Length: 196
Image (cartoon, rainbow, N blue to C red; front, side, top):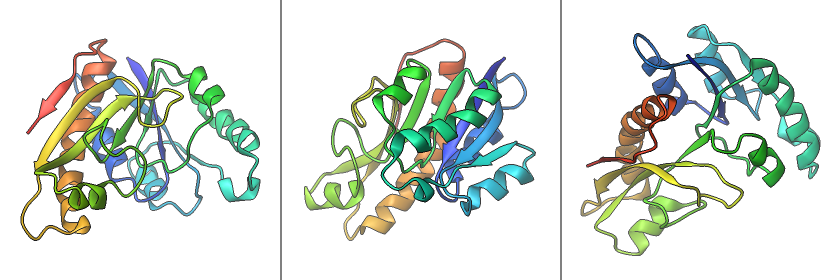
């Protein structure tokens, strides 16, 4: 049984979808939910589901990313995860941190990578006049949003879409795609999953 730690920054809706999926014959179980904000609403949701939690406030470290990551590693290493899932974790991790979990760290990104790495993905898709948008689950590497793709879900861009309406439809697909990819990844299967 694979041990999964999940990193969040906010409400944790993708974390909830992942945790709910890890039951029955699933090859993994959640062992920790950690956040870079002690006020992240997802921490309370994780505790309600019986998952241990940890919080390391990145703001206390200013520009000292190494110091923040060293503190974040303490609860992570204590939980001994086999897989680390980033689920709305809004901090860029150093190459040293990423290397520690090389080949076993996943992230979900709200665009069809390699299009629109980084932020403001929904507005960028609208501004470009794209007919489709979506989300991508990928392995995390030292290059931002550039690791091997493990799954994508496509969503049509509708007439009159705003960044908010498009984001809401994509989020619903994120909640389907990420658990499906995690199940396959935890079983040792790296073939990409394509939805939509």
